[in-house]
Length: 406
Image (tube, rainbow, N blue to C red; front, top):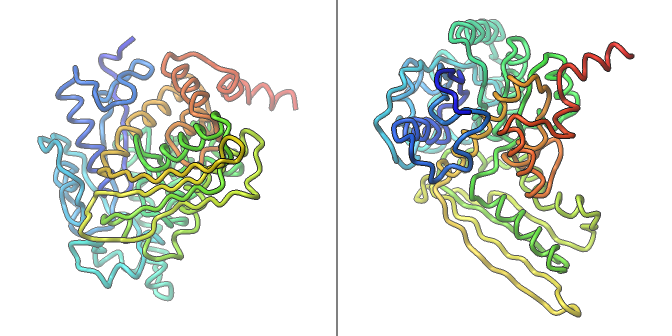
């Protein structure tokens, strides 16, 4: 069933660490096509990593705009571990309006650690320069973005904007709707999981995956599995605490606590959902998950600490203290390689709206939370191009027939 020619044309918003690892990974698994270790799925609907083609990208940093992707991904402030540097992609990096994509508190840090906004884009920054916001320039750049996406025939857009970029994410979501491009929303701005936004994608006849990417073997999936394990083994979870530290721009951006509300909700959703699926109250459980500190020394290394306090047999206490240390951006890239392929196969099959199974498997706040096994089942079915009860309802033809009956 492997595809031998067709490419999935992908655009990226935000050429940061996650984008760097993703591009490196696609080129690595293209060069070494027989290697499958490190990937969750070698083939999805006939598509392998080698079928992903990055056609263009968008950023606000003066050090990246105008460069080809093969150079931009290794430019400061990126600090992702360089696992494969023989990059061929000449995809251009174009300018983007800032909108709410940069936290003003970042300006207090050295340039090597933070974003450096291209001079001409300062008047598109709503947070730092609301009074001087140049709507005309923002509109001009919007038209440029539309032109670039059309010229490069982009079919999937990956949102790697910083946490808290509510308006900037909506800006790009609207462009996707206008052009019929599928969105993989990797940040905790709720689009796929918001019924009103999902309806817009249904009306546009395109699938979407979101919201807030969960890493391949990261804190969120580990928290989910620990929570599932506790319930399946008959334990009551008195407390589930997950704390994270790191030193990349994501953690620096989240030092602005005003940008953390949606992130905290999203991370805690992963834990709370396992209670809700089973109808178990969280009233007498303490749940906490979220970034706790930026430490520049760590770079792209993320360290997560877990503490679970459980009640077991006859109320006997069980305590788990654990630590996970991962390279943050490579840990996300394998998941996004899958998400891109799932959303593309859904496009080909005529499935529209927010994909339930792939979103539950790859995101922290999907439109429908699932147990791990159920999300995996949905993903495996889509990978084989088989419809399930869930995806059958989401066929474009099903919505069209429903409209006619109304």
